[in-house]
Image 1: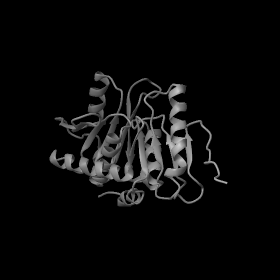
Image 2: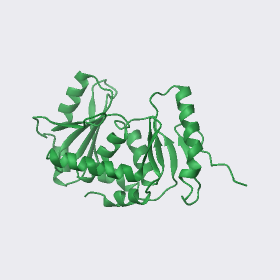
Image 3: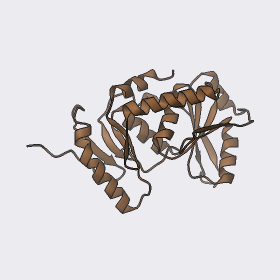
Length: 242
């Protein structure tokens, strides 16, 4: 598998919470078990290395673990969230998605699409047997554009151990900020906290709940001590026991 260091790092965090989604915690052990379950689904659907796969879903544990599985098998992930039917069709064609996966709800579905990978940059990445990531942006002209990333290179910066945080994510997996938040947090034994809406009451309530568990969840993390971190929110340390 690609980037085995990441799986070994995640395995070491054991029963520590990894993702808090809709107020439910998924531990690192459960996250890896779900990743393995996705590998079985991908094997059954004959999704091999180099496949371009649309990942349709929000920041759910299912979506996060499908992303991890696609990275491990050197596929090209195309995260999509909250797009219209017309945008979806356009994005799938631009990226050359041969597979489309619904990562939220039951049952998990992996659909086949009759397209071929034509773009030379994508083909070059596939030939190197490296995992890839395609993200979309409307750009300055308002026309949708796709950016192809070498996932192996993106992961390199996360190998260096850094402090563990409970991190509130405001961006989803279809944005580079959401990808960076997920990988930085998981690579360092923190917990990604997601919210259904971004209104102040919901965000403050999520921070309060996560802040209450951060100290005990991350008590075994070396200095600096466990903290909660959110976009544009202050970093705080747990209260002293003295």
